Length: 180
Image 1 (cartoon, rainbow, N blue to C red):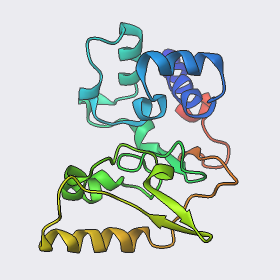
Image 2: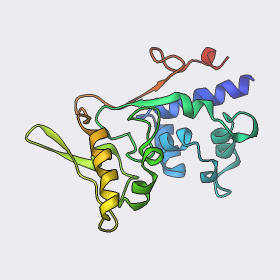
Image 3: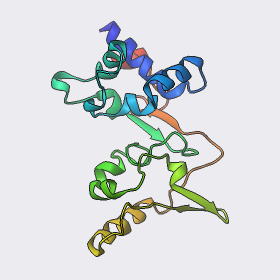
């Protein structure tokens, strides 16, 4: 149980200690650490990764690999949008855009980009700029209208960084004690 809690602490540090040397080293080896520790898709952990990394990314799954309580409990508070993944991030609420709009996600040119890269500032107003791999059909345009209604009024804040919060304790964040 202690090892389990320490692994969860390491995952929490991956989300928050972005300026450390070890974070840069692990990011070079394994890619985006934030996505790796909060992605509930076990299929992304492959044999090309070290045993240590596979254990670290899979250990917080409960029985039968059906629930990763850590990933499900971590939400991203949108700041500048540089850390928030547009399609897979939980910056919008409890579900990511990939889950809410799976058809649009499949058609998107790049929903793997950050929120900051998914739009631009024009005269002090955030403008979402999403592109598609092909021209959308008429019935698909209703999905984009729904998407833009959902995104209306949501914009990055250039003055603060994105931050992770653990829903178990959204004020203090992760502590080993919260793993009990």
